[in-house]
Image 1: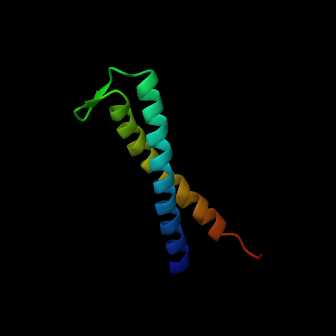
Image 2: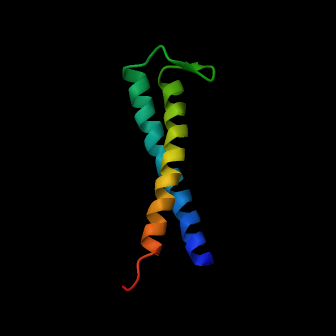
Length: 78
């Protein structure tokens, strides 16, 4: 039982890291090209939307990483 929990935790961490990087890159792209006047957390433009993308990416990446790791851990056989 604890092995499945460990696999889910590792999957969540890896998913969160991947989501952070992908969200940051996509957010910076969108903010730099389309939302140049957007202000968040004291910064504007690509920096602000990049931060938002990183936050959303971490949350979604962690959830999908946990679900994927548990699905893989639940398989039986080879």
